[in-house]
Length: 403
Image (cartoon, rainbow, N blue to C red; front, side):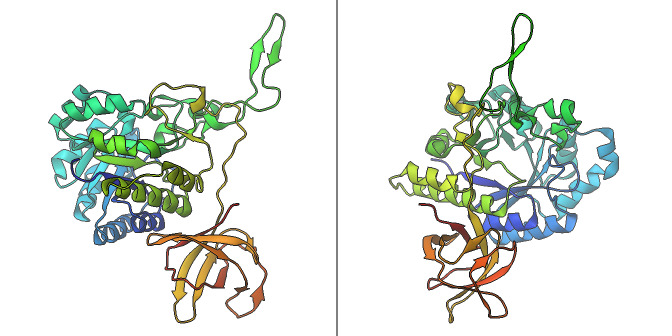
C-alpha cells in the first residue's frame, strides 16, 4: 500500500468542521461565501475560513475550499477572483476544488501554494483527461461518480496525479450532478448550489392507454432517485487500488451525521491498515444510525440494477440523535448535555465519541441548571445534567439505543 489514504469530510459550518476533525477526518472541504456550489449551506466568511484552517492544521488535518460553481459573469463581479484566491493562500488553505478551467488557470498563476483539485462536476472518467489536467498543474482529480471499481483500478495505474473517489452520501440521477430538473421545476439551478432534489419528490406514474392515462402506482408514490452511496464493503479495494482520497458527501448534513459517518469510516480505515479482521456488518449497522435514506454501493460495484434505486420504497431509516456533550465534571460524574431531540427517564441511550466506544446508559434521573429534577427533556437545545459514571468529553454524541 502507498501512503495512508486520506479521509475527506464535508463541513457546512465552522462547528461541523471542528466535529469532522475531532472525529477523525484527515481533511475537510468547505465553501466560502463566493464561488461555492452550496447556496443554502451556512457558508464560511473569510474570518471563519481562517479560524477553520487554524483549527484543522493544529489537529494535523487539511482544508480544501470549494470553488466549483458553474460561474457566470456576475459571480466574478461579486468578489474579485484574484483577491479571493490570494486571501485563501495567505491563510494557508491547502487547496481549492474547481470545475472551471478559468478559475483553475488563475489560481495556478497567482496562488502557487494552493493545490488545485478538479471537481467531480468536470465528469472525468479516463486517464487521458486526468493526465491532461496534470500537465496543466492540477494536483488531484475527483472522479465522476459513474466510474466503477475496475475502471478506478485502471485509472490509478495510468494517472499522473492523485485520484479522489466519493464513498458516501447522496447520489444524483444525472451524470456527475449535471441535472436540470430543479431548474425546470422551480428555477433553482443545481449547478449553482440551488438543487431542489426534484428526483426525490413523490410522483404519480401513468401509462398511456387507448383513450386515457392509467395510474400505475396505486399503493405508493414513485420517484426517480437513486439510493445514497455507502462504500463500507469496498474501502479495502479502493485502498489497494491506489486511490489518494476517499470523499464523504454532505455539507448540508447535521453535526451528528458528520460525527457518525466520519467516525465509522475512520475506524474502518484504521482497522484495515492495522490488518484486523473486519466485521463489515458492524460498520454497516453503525452507519445506519445516521442515515435518512436507504443505501447501496452505487456504481462502484458495477452492474447497476433496480436494487440501487429508491423508486416506490417506503423504507426510511431513522436517526435517533438526542444530545451533545458540552462538558463533564469528573469529580461529580456529571455530564452537561445540550438536548437535541426528545428523550425521557427510563430511555436507554448510547454515548459515543472520537475516543469513546459505544457505551450504553439508562436514564435514571435528569436535572436542569437550577437543580430541579425532570422526567423528560422536550425542548431542543435545553441544557440537561445527567449522572454518568464513565468519562465523557465535550463533542461526544448521544443517541437512543434501539432494540
